[in-house]
Length: 355
Image (cartoon, rainbow, N blue to C red):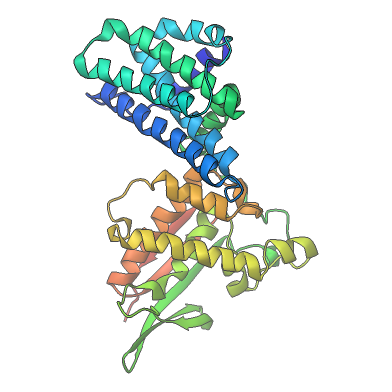
């Protein structure tokens, strides 16, 4: 079994479209879309190479995404072809530059045309043509197809793992006073001062943090946004903001205190919360949503690069966002409430305030 066949088997396990009645057409649509993404990255590189340092990584990722749809389409229509594709890819690239990108785009268009017409006997040769064009293109762009396939599998495992196992808590080996509390209850209390609506948080009889308002002309509930930091703590085991609020920074390790729990890390977390909130606001604060779009998750991953949380798989980020907004919607509508968390069981609860 060659690497492409192995990749095909792994890709089949992550095909969430296979139970759809229009499975083949969805794969074809995906192939077209990812081909466009590959060509868009090449265009960006050609136009602004010096101003586009992330080009190589992004092209690698887009090629991997294209490979997924391509291999699934081959597996569904002409599975025997997978055994031969790697061997046939040994030939040299026939052309370079714009002619090569046009050949690639035209080959994909040819497959879509055959599918539209229902001309399935010709699909095999057309898919072979796509492979030849892809191989030629990536050879000249310096992209290794096997490496792109492996990176794609790693990404899919991060987003849709076969088994969901939470990453170990980052502060597990620290003294209890330097750990985010494993169990805690915090009250979100809304107060009105003239025209201002403020939210304060209380832990027992002690107020923590500052009183917050929405800080925007159109009230949107952002005054409750500390719930997103709490969700990060519960589902990621990470929140420099919560560590600051509860005074549980890891002071015993100067490097961790400086680089992971410091002001810059807190600013990064606040920025992530603001970016996600902007997207959520456009989508009824994710009401009814069961997933978060990959581009948003990818942007978050890039944003936190260099911090310990960049080890966290995408599915945990997705869980933290959806759960954080679930409780946010409750806080906003009630308003306020009592929030409880358990870091070890990764649970976040809410109940209305009494009285």
